[in-house]
Length: 154
Image (tube, rainbow, N blue to C red; front, side, top):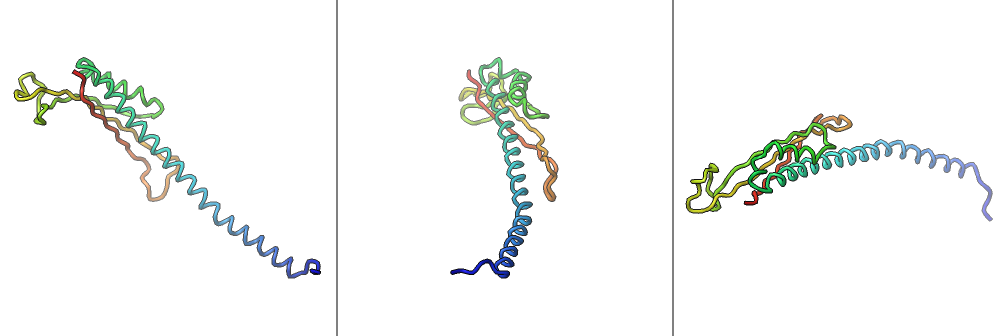
């Protein structure tokens, strides 16, 4: 039969409780830091995806036909309306031409004599991402760009 609890057994048990408390005290700040870094990374990717999707929405509006391709304000509005949850996002819209053989064009009807002219719509977006926590050694804010280019339906 095993003897009842001895003083040595009690001492060993209390020592292991103290060791567990020290390990917990050392690991909890590390785990909280990892959790916060995961949250910040997720927020940054969310902003990047939203900015890219906004550029795509603006260029899709402009690529519908020749009329909407010249409506830079409409393309910018469509881009900003797509990302209402991103504060401070800016959008810039433009259009440009290129000959179907790959040479440059100034969008004049006389350009591209050997081939036909292609019209493209382009929207560039950007937003500033600011982390919730200022991490040492990390920039306090980052500008995240987005860009989309589509050929206009003619």
